[in-house]
Image 1 (cartoon, rainbow, N blue to C red):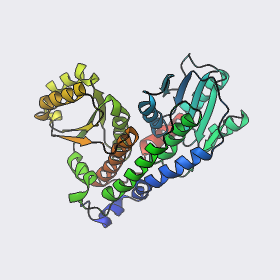
Image 2 (image 1 turned 120 degrees about the vertical axis):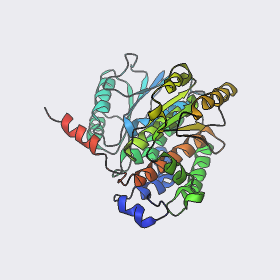
Image 3 (image 1 turned 90 degrees about the vertical axis):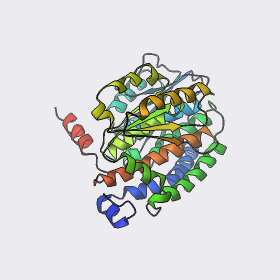
Image 4 (image 1 turned 180 degrees about the vertical axis):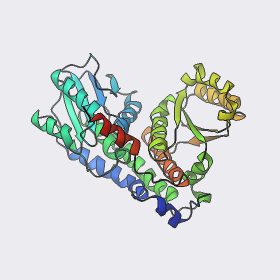
Length: 352
């Protein structure tokens, strides 16, 4: 098996240096906050709902923001991952059009529909057609640095959303929570880094357990965007199928699915992401579900969030998952950066 403590072995497969991008994530988040605070603030008022439009790595930021602020936000926030926008969108709707490349066709389609409805749009992008359309329509743009894979740009795609909501007075100031999350990420960077040995590196140990198995990620609803992030990163970086689901919903359907296909179930490795904010009923559901599944799966691990604020909780587990997906790619002897299937799909879609 690949030695995750051998830097030569790792660098042989990490040809695009994804490890450097992961190690730079705390700095990226810090820079993203500065960009968001220094970007021109739109003079939008009378906002009665919010829509975040984005796909893949550009869309997960909206999922995280929704979870983070839904208990204090007094208006609905909906994440839209389609070509079309909901009928409720009108001139009082704040619409975030988020596309790292600026060329995501679903987001561009949604942008055009939102513009026709005279929605209050903010574009978050590195450029591309989205930036050109926004400039032509005099729509505010938060310009973020280019040259990264969208999935390695979460800081740039998340914090502008959060900070803009804050600056518009729709949520409370999050400076304290952001500072705590940044401190925690810097500490975790050291613990998950290439130089940190397997014995003291949680990300490496989890990757070893997931190797040659099917990852299943279960979370409480408050961590659902983290489960989605793990699923996406394992697919894109590690090139493996992965699945996620949430409590309590999975107790009303998926739990029964552990009854047959024992040969496949014995190759499933279940990761249950835990949070300090999990309610007593959710904790009890997790305990009972674990008893049902433990003997049927290849393995089961509980992973706990860190920090005090919900923002720190979310990002501590997101950062762990990013590193796990990286080390699993190395164990699979594959470069984590290229996404050939997505590239092929995009080429085929451009054909008439």
